[in-house]
Amino acid sequence: MTSNEATGSATGRLEVLGNHTDYNQGLVLAMGVGFTMEVRGKKRDDHRLLLHAQDLRQNFAGSLDDLSPRPQMAWANYILGVLQGLKDRGVSLTGLELEISSHLPMGAGLSSSAALTVATQRCLQKLWGFRMDPLEMAKVSQEAEHRYAGVKCGLLDPMAILHAKKDHLVLLDFRSMEVVAIPFPQEAVFVVASCGEKHALVDGEYNERRQSCEEAARLLSVASLREIGLQDLERKKGSLPDLVYRRALHVVGETDRVKRAAVCLKNKDLIGFGKLLDESQASSRLNFENSIPALDKLCEASQESPGHLGARLSGGGFGGSTLHLVEASREKEFLTAFLAKAKKELGHPIEHFVTRPA
Image (cartoon, rainbow, N blue to C red; front, side, top):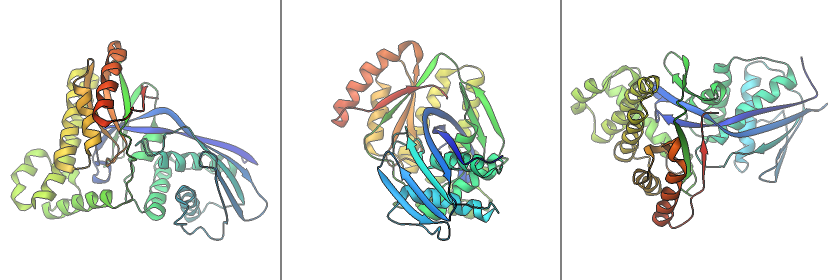
């Protein structure tokens, strides 16, 4: 079935635990949030491509005959990347007008770019009448990031968005590509706080971390860091440069923490689960060095607040947001203390929201 007009939407996502593990074939716990990206589409009778970004108040006009990246139009590049990916897979493209509206905070680490690419694909599937399985859709989104934004990201963001489930965390295995939904206890909520510095990965930091992980795997003679455990890594520490070892320690440790977190959640052990979030943040700060002082200060303010169970950065790091696991019964108490401490430390009010898996 095709239609002359269609709408596609996608939620933002939060990485709950499992930092930079996706492109290392590791494990990640993720969830959807209640904010969405919406793409409304209309067919055209020509080969024109007209894009309107409502929130940015920007327009792009082009042709389906030229889907090359546009350096000055970052948001439009994601859509051009999706169209190229669909074209490569044999989807027949027709003239198109798309209007994008977002309820996602930009640069807050909620993966607005992946939400845009997924929402675009969902809109176009309705508009052009084709189907694609979630893994292939995730690959189209990933290719758009790689080829059109210059970020060598893994499949985490689109996969988490495509499989998001209300009141559940999503356990993603990036070796087997298995997806398992794990119920999230009612006794806790997540507070997401923005550090005020935009989450930006295109300056090379993300790509450098990925190269270090690939170098570690090469020196350890494994296909990916998923193939090695913490004990083996410690035993082979001497064969790695210190920086490469610390990058690998973070990633291997994260997959181990996700395994333990899944057990905690099944046993409704929120204290144990929260401690793993705190451990993850410490590793981000010391080993992977993808935290920044503003993120560290938010996590420290959280630890000093009533109802705190655990806190860590969420997403690629280098800015964006922190994720705080909080006792649901002490949410107001926590927020009063946390927001005051964080404002004092950072010198500005903290934008935040409270959520459960959506």
